[in-house]
Image 1 (spheres, chains in turn yellow, brown):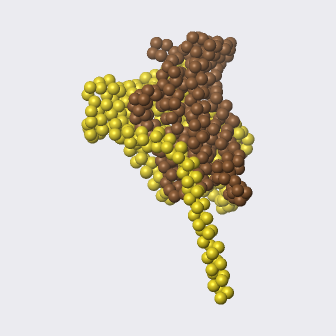
Image 2: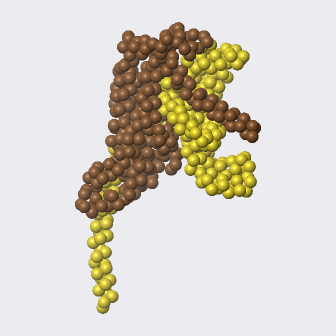
Image 3: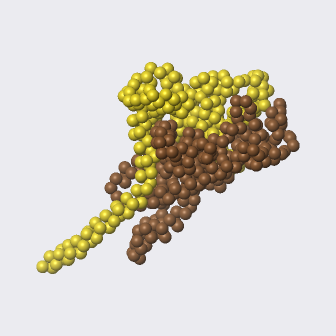
Length: 311
Length: 279
């Protein structure tokens, strides 16, 4: 008798609470939907819709200079693309540009972070200076390098080259040197990013492991190879992923310096898609190039994320 | 002992070299902006010269003044920041604090939108804006800036919302406050710092943007980053003026960057901790 009373009382008090709970949960859902709606509508309109429209556009011949030739062409743009030598060249330039800038950023950034970590004084100085390149517009950076740094003779880089006995060089006019220049500029601007992230990560490593390693008489190289590097791996992979995504779609830093030139020497795929669409005004084919860039981006990020998961 | 000293000295020299390499192009632009054209072009480059503010005077108040372009940059950046924050703060709160179906997917969607190459967004956008006559308008450019500022702001804000204790909200609900009131009166004041940091970065990114601006700008809307090209033409380069404009374009972001110094690593790596993403 007593037990039934307890259970019925329990049920009686349970029932309204779960009802109340359901109402609360429903209210919470509605509230969440109302809060999310503006941002998600804006994201749909500015990212998802353009993506769908881009894929649609890539199935058309859409030439703003010759509108009378426009029309649906299906996959023709993609067929042209596969046999377009300029596309393959730009893809290769993209991969060289991305690979070399990311590798340089990580290697120099890591080396410098290790160096600064051991400094007893002056760390603050590095932290402040490192911010400067990172916050600047790549467009302004490109402009400064193109003129005051790389101009023949009075540009500082050329001045240094002359004094080093190399002679005055045509830094942006020679295909190879132009590529080296745009890679150097990108590396100059973004190495501080790798440096700051890796320095922050280094600073958070536990000190006692190193103490133990020192007691075991591990050499500096062993400590780096066996302790620092494995512990830093997540941060390094994160830097690689982030910087790769940006380098693949770099625009201003090349556009303002060489505009892809001389010829197509520094024309990465991103820039080719832009030039095709807005300089040569063939928007349909430009769209196909942009879709190709998106596919390349997805493949590369897929590989990088697999790398991140693999231990 | 001497070998060790030598090593320390070498390392110090190397690190000083890097410091100089990072600071120099910026310092050099500032110096060049205080020169006359002939001083800029001098060989060997002049470190000592008679400084003049002539370039700044010409650039700001001469013919072809860049004041309208600076104003353009300010309107675009402030406008983007306001619209972004109005949308991102509620969305970030919902993603960080509320329970609802599809929450994981919503968070993933925000991250995934950042994978799109900007050039893939601007091509269709250009076609649409041309049709509705929004090329060279502030609303057109601010709308497309949301494509990169919103995901960034939402993720940065989520990380701040996640840091406040749940008890605060619960206490407010027990007092009978509505959800909206609680958000406005209790939660938002708690994340003021995070909101300030987000504002700084959204402004900075909008100020620095170039690709969308170069496609969508015209005679009415032309930010400084695009207007800089006026000083470099095939016929001639206006050296000192270009330097002055560069310095004016750098000034706000350098000030903001130094002010937000402590938060810069967080601002640059936002979203990366959870998934992929980029600035």
